[in-house]
Amino acid sequence: MNIPTINIIVFTVFAFGLSIWAMQHNGREKASVSACYGECYEKYEASNGGVVEIAQAQAAAKAVASPAELGKGIYAGCVACHGPNGGGGVGPQLAGQSADAILGKLQRYGKGETLGPQSALMWSQAAQLSPGDMENISAYVATF
Image 1: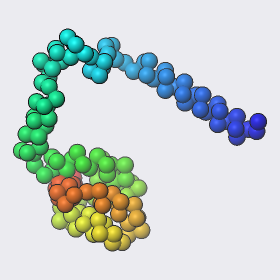
Image 2: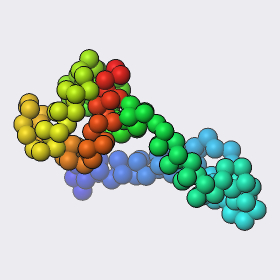
Image 3: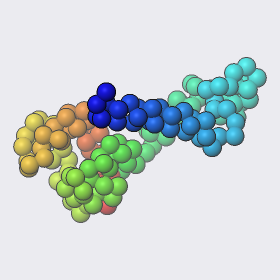
Image 4: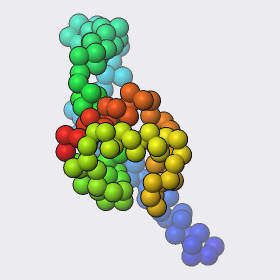
């Protein structure tokens, strides 16, 4: 075997071993909800509600949330390039731009328009957003 092959094998064994160790030492003192059934699940459901109640509560919260609150959750996909507060990084700074400016750019990216040297990165991101998502992200970014 050559050195690169040995390096790949060593790295694979290390990564696999680290994953096993992390699962065994995840800091949880008790089993997760997914391991809960029977009486355990009945207690969980009594204190948290069933799947339907939880979904209804989430829908009710979403119905009364402001566009900026809704945009905050969607913006999580933007953080890697634009930073948690829109300060930039891989992507340009968004902080300080108006909601209308951000919305206009997202709409143009969604149509595949080139706005700068990194436009190709934004085309697929904007294409995944609904018009409402774009408005909500714009509202959130305007809060920076």
